[in-house]
Length: 468
Image 1 (cartoon, one colour):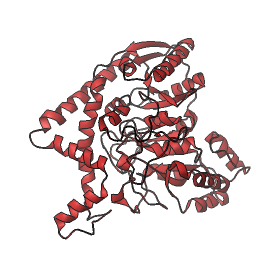
Image 2 (cartoon, helix red, strand yellow; image 1 turned 180 degrees about the horizontal axis):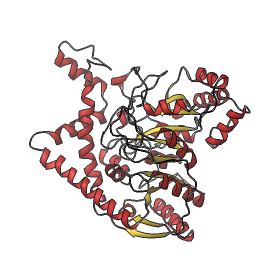
Image 3 (cartoon, rainbow, N blue to C red; image 1 turned 120 degrees about the horizontal axis):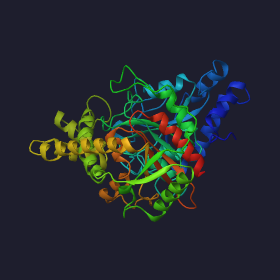
Image 4 (cartoon, rainbow, N blue to C red; image 1 turned 90 degrees about the horizontal axis):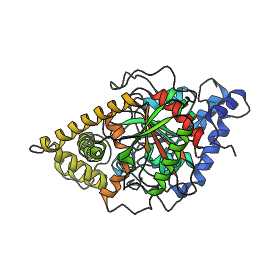
């Protein structure tokens, strides 16, 4: 069977030369998905994937991703599948149009083969909040794969597709990448269009790839990046993201002290320390740096994001689309019963928090103060990047925890994102790179200034080669 973990560029070259076909790649993907059912990484397989593969084999193979199968997180609107956001309130919903990111990938010959499981509406850190059942960690199925893009991370690690798409609002690409042992890239805010992706927190949502290596993630970003007339928040792209490794000699890197505190597992600290030693041996200067407001980032995040998502989820009312309660007798009943039946516990919790912090009498006490903390975070990161080329730390404070371990303790679950949320709050790009380990996967997080995604990817490729 064709190994879908091979470098994407190699597979594309073989498709273009005729030594490999798109049909063979898609068939290998679909067979692998069928065999992986026990991990529950996939919610639905595309009905049109094989037909698209046949069209590519019979026609134009010049695309940069010709014949490459990929998986999209199930909050991307797509053709040939339903889009549920892993929530009963959208079961089953067939989107009337397709996400820009998916359109761009398909225009270059990529083939979406399936939709990946996630925490419903991307609310979670373990993919246990899916209304259709949890995804299992691809390395140890007794543990979580991380979240909310846990299905995407597991799909890549299991070799179900060459890459997967995820969304990152507070670490939902990087954290599952770290816990599952793959590369996860969160680009600069606005670099990839969010059009056609179900919104969670609109001021921080970012689209990005999960892949087996940095070069694969770079290639996928290079295809997706750039302005979109359907998304006013999109920004200009750099010339290219398919870059070569950047020399680490002479680079200044700040190790974030707050990410190496008592809440971080000893194994994770050891992995970061080993990487620092390798960076130093390669000629980089690594120094400790303190970002005092980082300790407030998680609390800030869980005020601002519920506020935004409570507004974004208001459209699911049982009237316009999605689940509509059959028990309702009045309009008010339709609103109440449809949402009660359709939303899971975590969605309800976040809606209530968000509505509370925006309500009269509490807006100034909570929401406005959290926005001030966000401004402090932006200033501290900007100041840090005046001294350092990159910032470094663990992607997650622990390795993958057991299924069910934190389900009844929301605060403990939220702490899983403590090393990632600040990057979203300031709009900077970050990437999680897996490090060699004898046990469960561990990810190293590299962070760059806003708009320096190409430089981040070049450094990440160098770090990946260094730690391999």
